[in-house]
Length: 285
Image 1: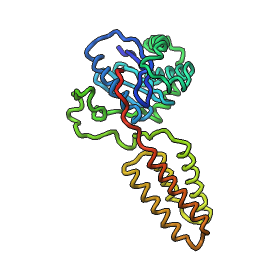
Image 2 (image 1 turned 90 degrees about the horizontal axis):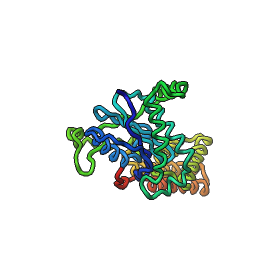
Image 3 (image 1 turned 90 degrees about the vertical axis):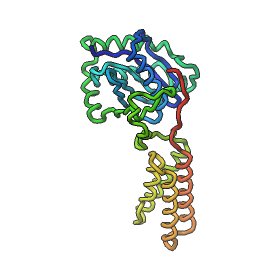
Image 4 (image 1 turned 45 degrees about the vertical axis):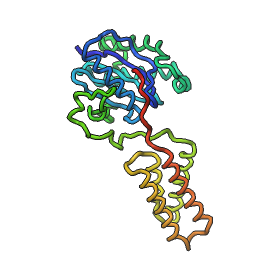
């Protein structure tokens, strides 16, 4: 029988559980899935905002938005469109009920446990699809999933829980970390946003004068996205900016040269300061 078994609300930056459904089933499969919940909660900051983990007879799906992740466990044959529609409802209700200040300043695990009432009601509705009153919205979710399917997490990416290596990850030992394409950077600061705008301005000024703007665009890219050897690339890009301005020495006055080089140095500093999000502390999810 296809059904939703449990759901949790977790803070992304540190894996703090904010709320969860009350589960009574204590089967071996459920106990194993709780380990996966714990492992995923530690890596939420490094994962895309919509993911699926297949664990044999069960699937774990989650979405993340505004620093909060909504995670659910269902049987392997439960429809994807219903699973992510269920998570979308949890997200909308949680955002409506609790403001970001409360979720960001929460210090105790399960401090919003009263949200379990809504989780249980919604879970009952979705476990009986014939009673759903939102069928008309499922077509939109189906289209969204087709256009942007959830990222499939492999067991290799999870590693081990509490020092006990998962049976699924033994064959994947040394397979590596989550790819840099899915690595998340720390939230952008005001100075980082200013640097991004100034870099775009320098690129626009170069284009207006008939020069290329590739070095400015590359700096913008490195400021927004995580890549391998990111700091080295930012240093080389700054060197390219300096060389280009030396080449344009006779076409620009000293103030213009100073502005472009200073912006380049400032953006390079912001790239170095905005690093990938670190590992979250271990909470007992």
